Amino acid sequence: MSALRAPSASRGVYARRTAVAAGLAALVGTLVLNGPAAHAAPPTPPDAATARTELGRLTVKSEGSMDGYSRSKFPHWITQHGQCNTREVVLQRDGENVEQDAKCAAVSGTWFSPYDGATWKDAQDIDIDHVVPLAQAWRSGANTWTTAQRQAFANDLSRPQLIAVTDRVNQAKGDKDPAQWLPPLQSYRCTYARMWVSVKYDYKLTVDSAEKAALEGILNGC
Image (tube, rainbow, N blue to C red; front, side, top):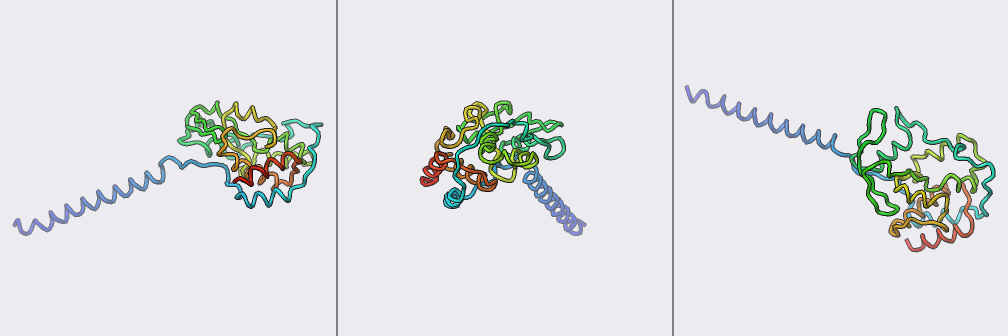
């Protein structure tokens, strides 16, 4: 009788091992799919060589006036999906292990600011910087745009125009161009210049002579 039971026992052991293996595979799959999202960043700007070419094609012109300017003429932050506005989308994109509440507000996470190399764990310490500031865009040609065009610019997630950075660093930047302000972290300046040129080129904004010279100097060293 024992000889007859052995194959059944072997099949039982095999079945259990198969079930365990399948369970482990499913668990690994779940961890891969549901694990923390990889760190992301703004869309990658063109390389330095392309940026130099694009910079050479920009119209060089003295900056216009601030007459008529208002941040309200660049509506932001707009709803991107559900209850998530542009700021919350960028916080989610640029942070690590970001958790959001039912209204899409970031309640926890870690954010690395590439402008100054600081790391923050409170979203209140983070500003979403317009790489090309709204007032700078206004003085460079956006004053002639429609409100819809300015809204698209102020909430553009498809280009390297929005980035999560330390609030006080962003406030120090204000609406300055690269001849007047650059990220304190020198290792990021090449990327910043590439981002700046890419945005101005895509939106057909102008550059002044000092701005162009500063950008050329950075890009030539990339």
